[in-house]
Image (cartoon, rainbow, N blue to C red; front, top):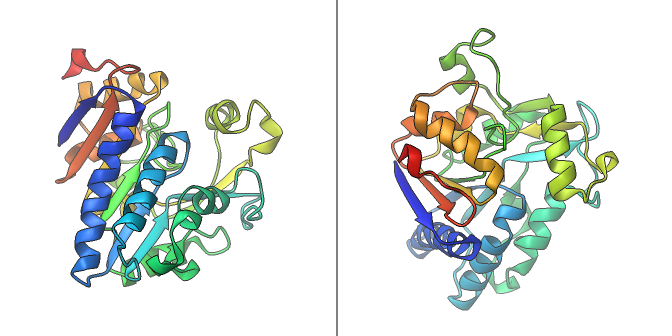
Amino acid sequence: MRIQKVSDYHAMSVMGADIIYNAVAKAMKQGKPFNLGLATGNTMIELYQILADRFNADKIDLAKLQTWNLDEYASDEHNAVAHDHPLSYWKYMHENLFFKFDATRNFTEGQAHFPNPADPAKFDSDLAAAGGLDLQLLGIGFNGHIAFNEPVKESEIAVDAYGKLPTRVLPLTKETIDQNTKITANGDSSLVPRFAATTGMKPILASKQELLLACFAEQQAPLTRMLGNRRPTPELPASYLLVHSDFTLIYTADTINLDAVL
């Protein structure tokens, strides 16, 4: 585990982008495929701009890059929201990253994958067939969730079983709906869908490399619990990253203070 304290959001974005760029560019220059797990939200916006600018400036051929998004909102248990929905993650990724690639980067629509609530198991089988994730970019929810894998009491699910959960459709908790209303929906709860297809803990944790970024003051509490307890628990999903062989946490010192647990 590597923990990097940086000064602010910009420094976090640069460091995170450097890690992803170096891994992807190395594979592309060697003609190797690369499976990159992507996250959404305000945390990632500057990072994606930096990544696009660097890939374009260095003329990196992205033909062998495949991206795998953690989530997509769903209008019900079987149907994803439309691509033009204000909170669609398809929309977010295209506006913040994919549309920023020059056409000469050779990144096509078929290289971007999102979990489909109509057939969530296909996401896992397609990812496995592609060789699994090489690097997974993550944020952390204010309750410690990663993707939309929400906390569950240990009395309800075994620690090992939670870590093996597949990609699936879930109803969103009130806490997550309220959080996303505040952060991404400008206070309009009606815009936030009540379901999401989310990448399971199993494919996330199987990634060769994990990168977690944190920059909100509200993330101090789950990170403090995670680093203080130092053991995986379904009651704090991000805690499973602690036992990963290649896990990096980058957090911003101007908003988060972890000195007490480091």
